[in-house]
Image 1: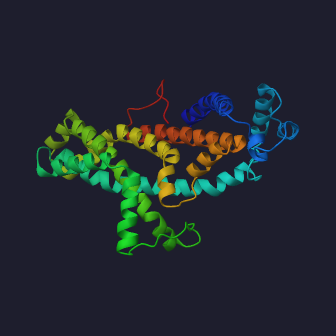
Image 2: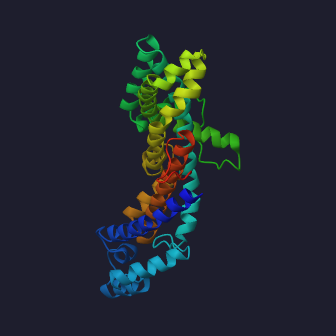
Image 3: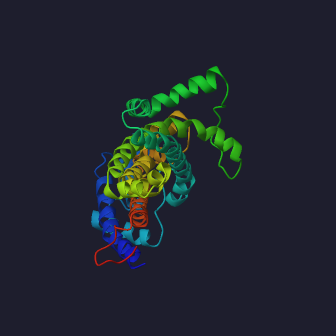
Amino acid sequence: MRYVIQRLITTIPVLFFLSIMVFSFIHLIPGNPAEILLGQDATPQAVHALDAQMGLNRPLLMQYLGWLSNLLRGNLGTSLVDHESVSQLILQRLPVTVELAVGTMVVAILIAFPLGIAAAVMRGRVSEFVAMFAATIGISVPPFWLGILFLLLFTVKFHLVTNSLYVPIWQSPLKNLECMLLPCIATGIREAAVLLRMLRSSLTDALGEDFVRTAWAKGLRGSAVTLRHALPNALVPVLTASGLQIAGLLGGLVITEQVFSLPGFGQLLVQSVFSRDYTTVQGTALVAALIVIIVNLLIDLMYSRIDPRIRTDGGMEA
């Protein structure tokens, strides 16, 4: 418990620094939001009045302090374009991307673990060659290309899947599965290739350790040695890769969301950047950074559960 509290405390300065970075970098985007909202025919007086109304004519420090004060109260501001709460916009879009990211990682795990374990256990055999060949193909093929190919094959040609609009899982699980299955597979194949290579390498090293030879000497079965002894020790680098993948997916699924017409979090961020919607960009970027920090924290906590040797300084248990 003390370890969890310490890790949470260390995130506070990180979040503060990220808030400064997010606020500062957003103002480096060229263009004036007031001019964009009013159009090219707007008079300087109208632009100045709208700047004053939105508080954009104040010094940057005062703008940041005001934004930070609202942020600490849970208020991410109001969109300059949609005139809606930024928090509400994020809550509408984030579940789509989270579902896509989770579905992608489920597909990746289902593909990577059987092939990765087989490649590590059966070194030098056909199974290893097939697994590594599949990993090479998976890394080489862009997810958006696979997405377009899946749409052409399963939707246009064979009519196996309907290219319908996104339906939340709580409204209709079956329709949700129908619209999320192809994008999860399209992005999951690439993530599976990365995990497969990592798992194969890590598990191969673990199988050569002394404790594995001891387990063999005790007469344990091959599956027990691999799954109960070698695999848990091989999961630490795999977890690291998985955490980075999940964090990257939350912001890197923009193209997949575009291909499959999914109203996700990434699309909101990109649209906000192009429309110079400062408040929405700031809110979405900060939420994305917060998710990355939470994912890394969870991965750190899982380390000590999977490998008992990993503890904090002084022997405190996680």
